[in-house]
Length: 153
Image (cartoon, rainbow, N blue to C red; front, top):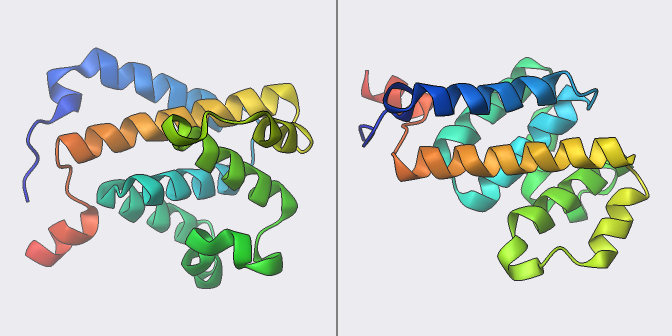
């Protein structure tokens, strides 16, 4: 599958703006593994092969075990594989990603607020929104995952 449009070349200023948000999140103080787990979970919900491939590779490079990666979709049932902070971030990521269905209820906000400071929760929400944007770009314009490019070669 070849991309429909290379949005980074067609709209470089837009791509750069998203990169600036990505850079902000990197320096926000949120744990990089927690952020990558959120990116991967959002990408699972949205079905973005390009981002699933990329964030799985990123987490493996950071030393995250296969058990955690395999259980991410079922984190609710994974016991102590995920920390309380990771569980709170994943729950928040899910409700925000599914905003059209959830409306992000007060109970979800209260649960996340019990674990994260206001700044952390805002930064986490920026991360969720950014990944939803990247997923929509990659899916809409058919960015092929690295694994498929290797398989073709």
